[in-house]
Image 1 (cartoon, helix red, strand yellow):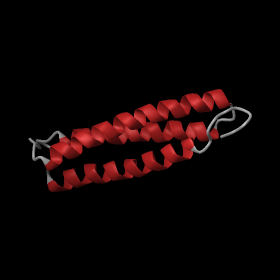
Image 2 (tube, one colour; image 1 turned 30 degrees about the horizontal axis):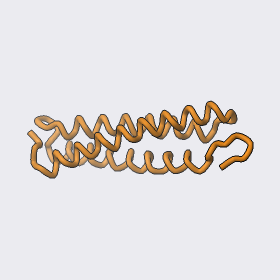
Image 3 (cartoon, rainbow, N blue to C red; image 1 turned 45 degrees about the vertical axis):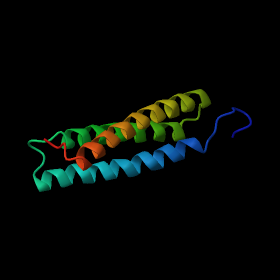
Image 4 (cartoon, rainbow, N blue to C red; image 1 turned 90 degrees about the vertical axis):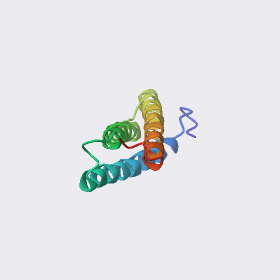
Length: 105
C-alpha cells in the first residue's frame, strides 16, 4: 500500500494479468466453437464473444490504472476494471455450466 495515497498498487497488475489471461482463454473458446460448428445454433459462441469484449475492456481499464499518475483516477479505473472483470467471470461461469450441462441448443 502506498503511504502517501492509501492506494494499493499491487491490485492493478493482478486484475490486468488475470483479465488478459481470460481474454486469451475466451478467444480460444470462441475459435473452438466456430471450428467445431457450434456457432450457428448455440448460445455458447455468443457468451464467449461477450466475455471477449468484457475481458478486453477490463484489461484496458486496468492498464490505464497502472499508467495513471493520479491516484484518484487510478483508483477509479481499477474499481471499474474489477467490477467489469467480476461480471465477465459470472458470464464465463454461466457459459461453462451451459456447455457442460449440454444445454447448447
